Length: 247
Ligand SMILES: Nc1ncnc2c1ncn2[C@@H]1O[C@H](COP(=O)(O)OP(=O)(O)OP(=O)(O)O)[C@@H](O)[C@H]1O
Ligand SMILES: [Mg+2]
Image (tube, rainbow, N blue to C red):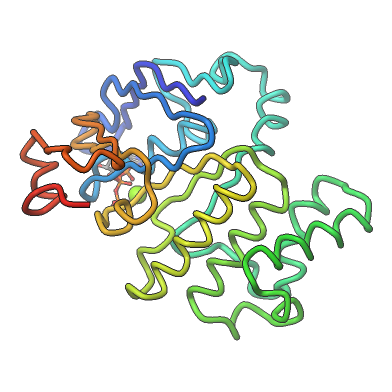
């Protein structure tokens, strides 16, 4: 379980303080796929980065499996962070490294034995159905394949949680659904909790168990996506969900 408690974050900007997150509290059950949706600037990325404390909240707590990450010494935080993977809209692959070396990179940094690295890279590339691309460079891959390599790189570390920041926003609708199905596979087969940030309701509907709507730093509503009768109350949720909730 990930518990976010009263998360507040204000950025200093040239035009004065900007409240990016305003008293956000939410529970994300272990083993689920949880979505955050909202317009540009709503605070989605900031909130996601608060989960692994890449962004430190000014106020509030991040509790993961009962442990308060906000009060961990930095060294301990770094250790825990290894169990929290992250993927991004623009993949963040190393362009001068092969697919194999991209997936191996965090394992080598973590000083895993060479045979363990080889096994984990193979297993991860098998999971995203790209074993034949191991020797290729990212430039030769499509956007969807690059994102699958990024997923492989993240799962190679055996994370418990995978944070996904707009992972399909640069992809066409077909490729989006392919990549989302791999995230679902990772969730179901490996038991990894997924937190998915998106501005695309279609993406959220496709794989999320629950979705929270953010607006100007506030958490407005949370929906159980398996409940077909859910009805958005707020204007922003109605806008994002379109006419009628309809899964
Ligand atoms: N490092 C920063 N310094 C100052 N302001 C920031 C910083 N990061 C984010 N912001 C501001 O905080 C607000 C929330 O930003 P955030 O990136 O979390 O939004 P978002 O919902 O992810 O948007 P998008 O959909 O465009 O990615 C925005 O107004 C943004 O301009
Ligand atoms: Mg963002």
